[in-house]
Length: 115
Image 1 (tube, rainbow, N blue to C red):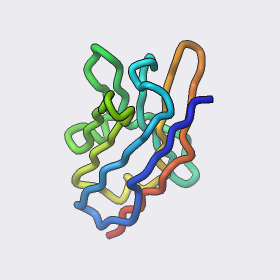
Image 2: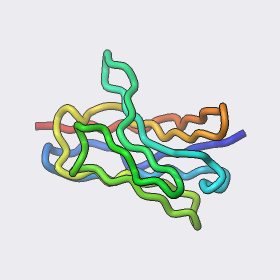
Image 3: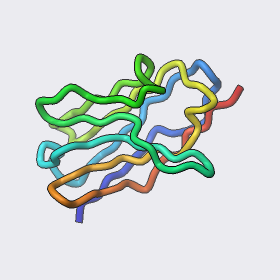
Image 4: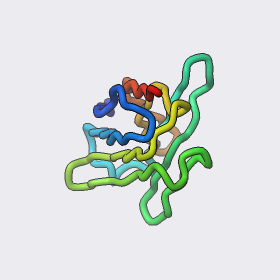
């Protein structure tokens, strides 16, 4: 069973930065794609950033220029660097991995941006 473990969430003031980490129990190169999704209270889960081998990362319009997704294959880790955080970035951030028809999710990490 694939396990994805997120860390790095917390409380930060608007304009600040956080870096989220997602450690996978298997080689991340074995996944077709990985990404970060978030869910704000009362809202649907949405894709924030995605990354696949040989393909440029993709970002939600709301985070372009502020967030950067990256991967460290040697450590089976995917990161999300979040800069210039805004109040609307608040939510639970989930790591996601896709392999064929199978979707895998982490347990989520809370990010709260305060004014």
